[in-house]
Length: 353
Ligand code: NAD
Ligand code: TYD
Image 1 (cartoon, rainbow, N blue to C red):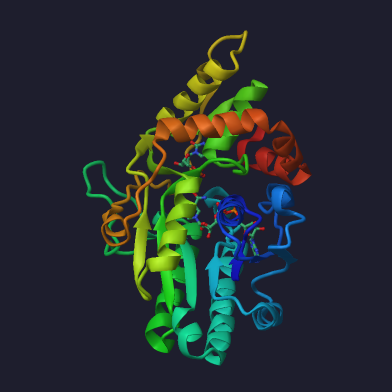
Image 2 (tube, rainbow, N blue to C red):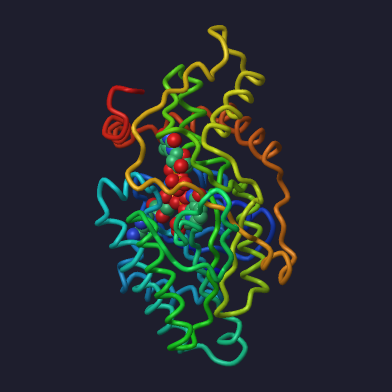
């Protein structure tokens, strides 16, 4: 079996569901259920004996040790993190604790466990660290996309905490020989995405007739990848990636934020027309994010060349699936919009939404 951390979050949840849909190998899922963790995402596998959910913190070394000793996984896939840049600006402490300390604790627990393995089991073991393109910093309009050799230049507390965790993972390979792989992926979108990130926030607000907040001039560029493609890339790297290597994952799909918001509005207008007119009327330019990175772009040639992975979805097909999913799942959305969610929206956007 494999141990997944953060498997009640957006990407981890999709990963667990896709994994169990495609194979019989069980998953132990360790998640602290912060505001971003949601057991409803895992409803489909709630009574599946192949899915063992454990409510716990990656910073709890004894708990992690006990899980490893009991379940003896062949791999750890580490998603658990604080993941929202804006939240990291308001309060970086939790990012330092979970993303840096938590990864360090997990690495130490993995190393102790790995040292008890022998022969083929020891050789085959993998610690897969799931990271982000934000560690590389910001690109100018005509800069080449990030390769795996691009210098680390993190600019937000979130990016800095992920960069630190990447460095720890690298050091545990070089110093102790722990067989790690790291993937640095661009912005994901898709089902079960918490509605405080750009795409789900736009969908949810547009359906409710609320303002669609666009930071600054709306011309910041991100590379967007459908979450199912990211999960497929992780499975590929887990199976065939070389220990000690990093692989960039991206969709070859750069868009400005304004493009994204207009596209989401157009899909909603098509699938659920609004009598009051096109949803793009709701776009509202708001104060820019402090230190807002201008452009991210991923050069995903290495994973294509070495491991044969390529995204299956185009942006058009992926965004259509995503909008359709949100339209079909209002219950999931309503349930994640708890008091904690509303507090965040008030803190970040004040009276503008
Ligand atoms: P998310 O915020 O939706 O989910 C994070 C999950 O981790 C939640 O279920 C939360 O409860 C859990 N968690 C948080 N702190 C924990 C702790 N101390 N112990 C145990 N569990 C804890 O995040 P996501 O968007 O699914 O991102 C998953 C991973 O992928 C992160 O490491 C993130 O840096 C990385 N990543 C995300 C994106 C993206 O676009 N969302 C892109 C590239 C990389
Ligand atoms: P986000 O989804 O927070 O991802 P990240 O900051 O990790 O790339 O934001 C994506 C882009 O959208 C980013 O440039 C910030 C911008 N943005 C807005 O313009 N308005 C919003 O309300 C949010 C949440 C983000």
